[in-house]
Image 1 (tube, rainbow, N blue to C red):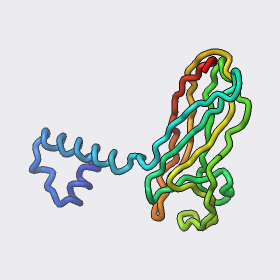
Image 2: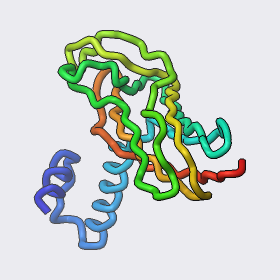
Image 3: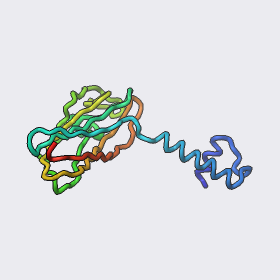
Image 4: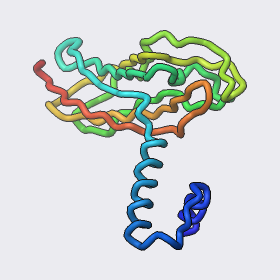
Length: 170
């Protein structure tokens, strides 16, 4: 209720003049607006698999990044502060990791005022890949951890889980 008083005071509304149902409606609207304001829709992720030979497949992770936003490369010094992209395969008894995740997109080196440091970033699009051996048809879960920033602010790191069907004979 304290939060409502603060918000209504800021909006110059008298909380005592609202009935309970009106307070509920206003609270729901504020929750929806707050959720929208802090949602992380600046990056859209996808994942694809390509056969290399027999039971080996290349898993490609792709990010489409909204204009004005950027992701951080693993080449960014840890002391700089931002959380770089990381990709982890969820455990699956039918899939064995054959090569570590590699960033295929070319990172841009620049000074980031948010961290007062030189960093390596990706703008517009990001691509990375890893290789797996598939023992049996299965669905694989891939978790991408990343932080997205613009020139003014950074959003908290987020884990996004992607799913892909892997078929041994394709």
